[in-house]
Length: 278
Image (cartoon, rainbow, N blue to C red; front, side, top):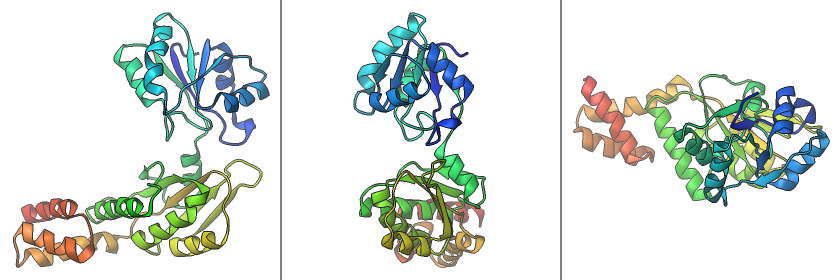
């Protein structure tokens, strides 16, 4: 059983997914740090574990670091859980872990359920490489800009399956922006994973966007989008090579950025690479 700070993965929906090691560490911990003490109290009660809980969330993490480090220095075992799944993945705790590592204090982990990986392997899309991106920006303009940056990276050579979490009330808008940015690319929406009403809906992005524009989504949601096809990746290089034949790297990058709507600095970086290879 790990000592010190232990990152304990908890079920993402189905209580049967809790591991024997997770139960043992939670039962043997001097304190369990959690995002929502009420939520974790229900989990511990279901597991028949009596443990002291304290909150650690995005609003108080910095203030909690010193007291937790003091407990670790005193030889206490401190468990860290999120509301569901693997701690730190789109959840608080990273700054605490960094602080413990910096002091040379023991940090361990109990692996277990993870919504992003479960959605990935159920999607039917290439499982590696993949890029987990957390939650998309909540606002339309920022979301479009973020997706535009990803498209530029793809045109410069990135080829990975993309994975996001999303809130159900923002799902339709996010899918519409993805369809606009990535086109008719194969994708999957995984909802309520491991729960009674689990749903995996697969299809091209425009069709998924249309479905969820007309159908209310509920529960936890993960979106998986397949990698670009090679012709799509080569489009940027083709445009840049044609422009470089008659223009400087700077001017070629400016022309292609204006024509594609991609961020100029990313287009310029790829133009520099192509220019150096000529």
